[in-house]
Length: 218
Image (cartoon, rainbow, N blue to C red; front, top):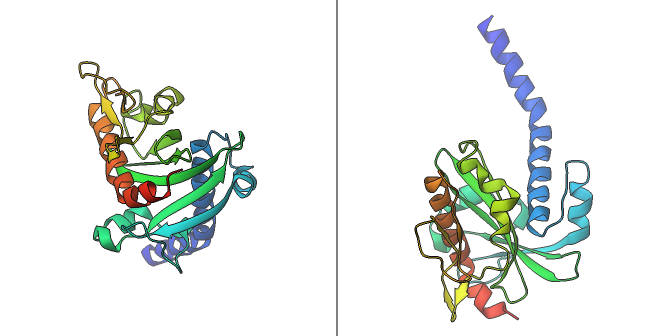
């Protein structure tokens, strides 16, 4: 009986794998679209992705283009296990509804209970945040899970990553911490660890693109 059940489960996993992979691809496209303020669902995500996001590239840590690697297929968690100078960095280019050319950078880090991730889109100056989206695997409902709510994400729009040419990212500050003009947003009340994890994710992921952002800013 044990052998039969194990065989059935193995077959089911094999049969479901293509569908699961497809679901992950759709969710990834949906999240990227949300970072450029394009609402999407599972039914139209692929169509809208093809409409708005038509270019991508892969960089190394020096901001140089890497050939022979598909940006969409890069798994950030796997890349982060490598030394920084061996990581492949995905970059996506989109034209938003208002005609603005934006650049999308993927994000991945750690919250309180597990992985957190998202996408950040930048205006042509490669400094000002055009849009952002976050998600999580298991943060606390009503607390850390608030990172993927519109009120929290909206705070980042218009914030900047550089200050007088120096990369500083965006701080996520508690109510008793002094705000930093153009470089800070309010943390989630009761979700300090998730908020700080998100702050570290932003800095650690985006700083790897620093050379590219400085060289290609308009």
